[in-house]
View 1 (cartoon, rainbow, N blue to C red):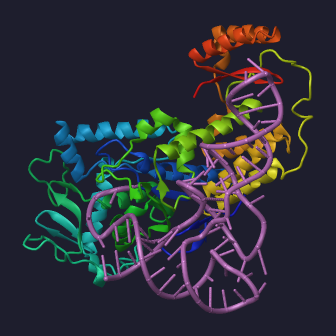
View 2 (tube, rainbow, N blue to C red):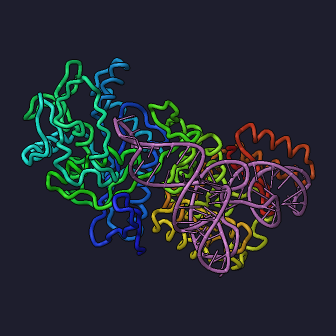
Length: 477
RNA sequence: GGCGCCCUGGCGGAGUGGCUACGCAGCGGCCUGCAAAGCCGUUUACACCGGUUCGAUUCCGGUGGGCGCCUCCA
């Protein structure tokens, strides 16, 4: 039952999460005009894990991650794909669900679609018009920015300083160049649109989040999250729309840093993207998650093959630990790791080995949770996890206790699957037989034969690891 | 130009006014029939210049460099 603190972008202060009420978290999800990339996955992972951690500390958390499936770019991309925009958006939304599902973190509690929130959107716009914070102009509806005195408070800008760079010559429908669209009148060629009190059209970019957040979490909620590139104008405009309509909005803001390649933000427009699905194929879900939590969420995170391979190596180190110290988990009740040959039954048992030269596994686990409670410091938390692995590997602490503590830690950050490595390793009868034969050859000091068998096993995809207690098969990475 | 962030060892990446982050990679060693796994050791890390301080990588000021947003963007 820790006090969880986060840094609030709005005030710049570290604030305590209120545990007396439901912790509503709204995180901006993707605009589905293409498959998502690694950078898009960062907020999904960060906020999913934050909600998981809060729950484990006794908070009631509700995580909402929306899908923006109405957008100019969707029309364009659909046209290029030769598809109707609604069908295209649906296809991309499905792909987004599939891609994020593979991360193995479960689903957010709610995943609203903009297209399913139209009535709440038009209601909100009507209220803004009534309050004279918005106006109609040739079928478009605009938000009257200067009518909302607090405009700029999130991104720390003053309306006086804002760039007035409206394209000269274009006859604007706006009263003021700072104003932004809440509703856009239907244009020829746009094949998805809705009826509204102001005629056919579609919502502008920011309004859907104001509407979805309120629909799922009510008018005032604990945390609004998203990428740091959304601070302005997207989140600033969300605040304006909701608060001008008399609805209190998010009480705190969290922004994750960008994933970058060569010190440049990964973005679809830069063309330096690496798709999430590709990363999952190539490196596995655990490595992708491990990578995304390898840096503090607020900082930028370097991306590249080397970083991903490091994540693979980290994850392998954790798996190796659980190969030596199996824990029960999930539905599997049998021992997940089986040794062949060796002096089984002899030698010190897990419980007997291990002194107490280092901090206890329990204190490591507490330090891990402390790090997460301190503005969700995942890298500091993971350092504790690796310290514990080291403690246990050199037998400074009892293995079973370490395994239990480490399993809890990894579960918290979505890496629980590492505690059950090599599922089905015993299912390969041919490999098991070969392994026994090799052990016989080794016992007879026929190392030529033993190595032949090892090569054969390698061809079958198995790596042989010998130890004093026997030999083990591990899937080749 | 405005607002904000950053500059840590070969790489990634935490953190702190004085005590080994952690991971990866390299090198040497231990263990092993060999290997893998694991363990041990290892390459004077905190951009630069001032200031505060008994002491600064950590606080303050300046210089240089990089990034994000100000237009679509997680």
